[in-house]
Length: 269
Image (cartoon, rainbow, N blue to C red):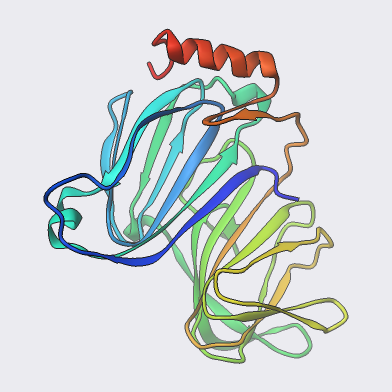
């Protein structure tokens, strides 16, 4: 029900005081066999890796890192954010790589907010048609929404949308490919997911809904104003998974090789 996704981690909004003493974040660590996707909602994160990429993602930005055959990276609060302090809110998603791309060259996609297209979200009517009233928006990070494509390059079909519904009680329809897995994460607010029988299923703030692959898209009604959602989906890879710590491959022999490569200093070059 989750493929091609491996993990989703959400850092709830938290206020950090100015800090000039120690770095906050995660020091150098390896990855192999998948991609990490970090979305910044509030605050700043500075990234550096073993193949020379260095970048700061700010509110609205996305960092899409392909570990592939291996990379070593670190993620800390940026120097500027550390000095000033402030509200911090982020999420990270791990996307599995197909077997044939597990050992691809490491790659880094810095996707800034201004390069992420925004599509108006229209209110759905009772008969399933959309009205002309704009009730929210969808930032298309990966995949496509109503014909608008996101900037992220992926190794398998993936949809990643950052959606906002402005008014309480608004019904919207989100078309979604029939054969894709789909996850709905409520970042802020509350929603009711309307089933084919018309019955609502409430999902509260920081709740997750795993959708069935029944086709026809997703019908959602906002239960609070300014509701924010993250819609994640993709074509299942249907391949064996062997995972241990920061390595995700297809066999345990490949996991053991990844450990050996890391210990011998071969990983991340």
